Length: 320
Ligand code: F6P
Image (cartoon, rainbow, N blue to C red; front, side, top):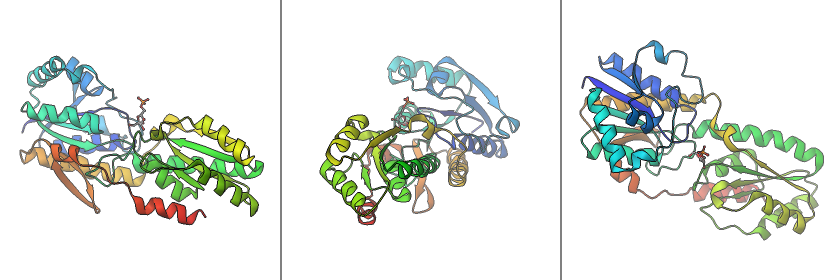
């Protein structure tokens, strides 16, 4: 393999830069030309492609965002859009492609591999919603960002004797809410994977208050689909405890990647390049039981995610 391309697609995630760096450096180390494709599949369709060298990935391992920029591309979902992309890959002599992104980006990668382009997917999303891997790049950093926010909210919550609902991202996956809830000592964790009862949430608040507790944190995953502010009003009405709402939003997608995310991204980037050198295609890389793995992309995308019920139960036990 002489030339490969790398792109980031979908929502950005801290650690994407470390993954780009690993792909570029591992490629050059193996005498492969690496082309950086800008703004995901948009850039692929429009030919926004430039050769990367050792210096183009210098000083980025610690930076959030993605130096290649990213996009959610509707055109690539069409036959016509993909035809254009295949043409561009041919013109630039790109034989192998590394796609860094979430499940939507992987579906695109799968289509390209079916069309004959050797394609490898690296999981880059804060959501941690891909079933085949224990961790996606960006999740750990987002979790720490949320934890930092909860810790701060807790201070002011205690000063005022309030309850706080903290709404976090994750799309349909409750992992950010779950693990931040456990690490942050939340009173309740509300996730799309588990039924919840507002009475339970209120009962905990009242019990806590009656034993002199000054603050209460309720973690709410956005995937629940409800309105955090309405929930806050309802809780306030039932319990009589003033309830504030903080929607953390895109702050969760920014910031310097954690050590874990940088290490994961570096390993996965290098692994993706090795697979391309071996002539593999239509695979995704990830981490299972602390080991770097690769898997057929169809299989990975058809796997059903198992919610960590044990940890969920633990959050309930520890917040009595
Ligand atoms: O997939 C990452 C993510 O941040 C989700 O958690 C969230 O639902 C979505 O992207 C937000 O997308 P956008 O940045 O396009 O609003």
